[in-house]
Length: 230
Image (cartoon, rainbow, N blue to C red; front, side, top):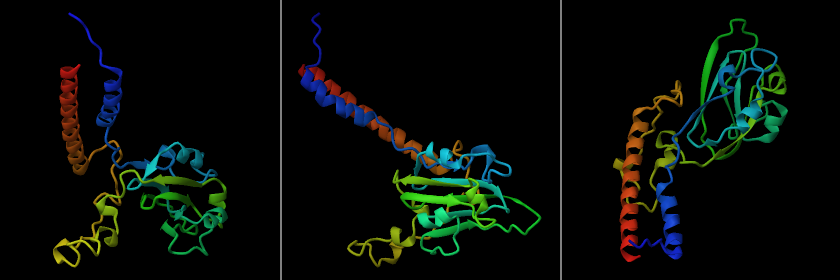
């Protein structure tokens, strides 16, 4: 039987379709434990972590969470202002660009372990540091900058009401039935580790499998047509 290979032109047309169809869906939202098992401490105490090196090795996206395992002797400060970050001091920072997720009390002798969950809500460069002891913890290495990509975008549960509301030219505008509820994610204070899947992830995975199956079916039909005409 004579064997005929696919004409080069047809192969060139099919290859991009195969690549696009078989490419996996975007990764699910992730939880990143800052400093991994060593937690969030300045390098004069429990940890000896290069937090900048830790952050540089990660790919952060909107909707991901940072998990800070630390204690009440350390703070978690997030800022989009480089000057605030560089000074290791938020006293003159604006509420619009700096948020104190956890404020420490160095005078408190009863140090308590705490876990702080911080959602990544804004695309672009952001900074984290601990400002206690007049910035000494920050200057001793308890700081890092990171870049947040768009990824899949924010899930609805993390969007502000204005982001969820319909546009003025939408037929649903001013329709009370379409007004979004303000939803606080159920795992905000105690998010599960990235290896565990919640119900939403199971549903998303099911939809991804279904979409993948449809893509494979389309590819098989396309290849069948090609075989007929070559």
